[in-house]
Length: 416
Image 1 (cartoon, helix red, strand yellow):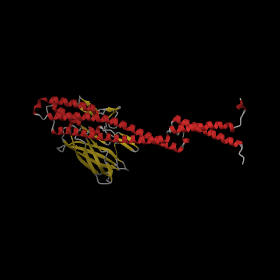
Image 2 (cartoon, one colour; image 1 turned 180 degrees about the vertical axis):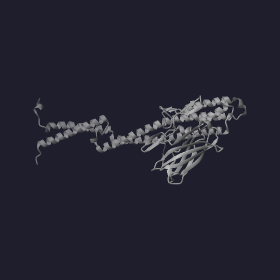
Image 3 (cartoon, rainbow, N blue to C red; image 1 turned 30 degrees about the vertical axis):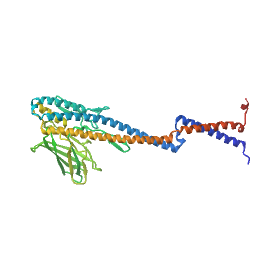
Image 4 (tube, rainbow, N blue to C red; image 1 turned 135 degrees about the vertical axis):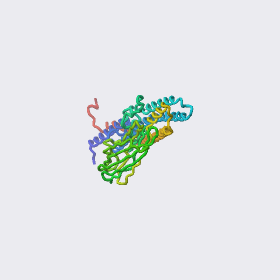
């Protein structure tokens, strides 16, 4: 069978073009340092590369989130540490007051405590990157102001609670703040459940103890009355030790989710906080019902008090007493000591959050290295191998050009 010259020439030209294309591709890969520069180069490999690049992008986002959270947490820990030092100094000074020789120097103790109050307020207003550390989720405004004229630390925003969170992995968020509510406020947190099978008009109640800034004990009564499905009114009363009712108020429209039974709102407010201030009685605390649920089971309401009183009110009460020549009561001294321990507990909690963020960051760094290696194996050019292939293709091309003189017909241009 005779093979036509034209067939030989066509095959030769196809081989020549293929060699030139291969040579150009190797040169481009060496220039870009990438084996896959467009999807058509290797569709399967391109799919893997896109997936790995997406993983790297997510890892970098999580690391950025963690870095921000750790930075704000460092600032918070520094502020808490400063507060704890201030309160520890007060504990030392209050211990000195037990000495019988200090009766004529109470004014100097009052001045010392006033200075400490100012320092605590300043630390409570610590900010990081334009956001106040102890402002909770409403952290754009300064949380506290010390009004020296009225001798009162004023809370500037309605809510200083709420958790700030960052996403640290797919589907997982981590709280990274310690709110002002956790640190400074006396919070009567209610947990457990109301009975969803009760009828409209049925009453469900609970009682607990609260305290004023001097350590005096009161009874807090909370009475829930069902008004409609998943809806209640709340009447709370405060009774002193002589059974006198000094506060009585009713809130309506407390709603629970009809599907989950979780608390939803009080008059549309999702925080679930009732801030009660009674300056004449030196009472300042928060009733928190946000963790209360509605279930088809018997009523079970538990109330836990985070600390006996707002520390600012306690210190101001002690200072005012000293200016009047009165030493603080044992209950007041104990509340200051309890707050010192409270701060240590919050420092421990912040340290635990910091350790978790550090651990996750270590895992992300390790994962980033693994993904980077996989991406490199899938995408990066083996320079040594590519150079050998380049030399081979160049040699083949040179040889092909020499063979062309024997296969391709000559034209007049070859003789000019």
